[in-house]
Image (cartoon, one colour):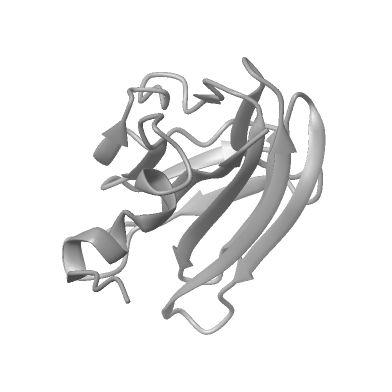
Length: 155
C-alpha cells in the first residue's frame, strides 16, 4: 500500500495522471466599480496564476490545452444594488449567477461550473444582458469579488 503525504495528496491529480504542469488561477478585485450590461469583469489582483494563462489586464483566461476545466466566481455588492454575471467560453454562456442586496447590507453570490475547452479557447466573466448598472463592492474588511479556474483533466 502506497502512503501519500499531505503535499502529494494535494497534487495527486497533477502528478500521478499527467507529467504536464498544473493550470490554475485565482484572481480578485479590491476596488468598488460599476459595469454596464455585457461588460467583462476584470479581476486585477492574482493570488495564483500557475502558467500565467489568466490576464489581469483584460480579465480573460486562455486554455493552454484541451480538457475539462472548473471555474468558480463570486460577485459582491451592497446598498440596494445588484451584480448579475455569467461565465463565457468562446462567446457561449456556460453558467450565470447573481446577487441582489435590497436592505443596504453587503452580500455576495457565487457559482461554480465545469466545462470542456479546446486549446486556445477563451473564458471570462461578464455582466448579463439583464438590468442596467451592475455594482461590485469591495472593502478591506469584507469578502472580495473573485474568479478562479483550473484544468481538471486533459483530453
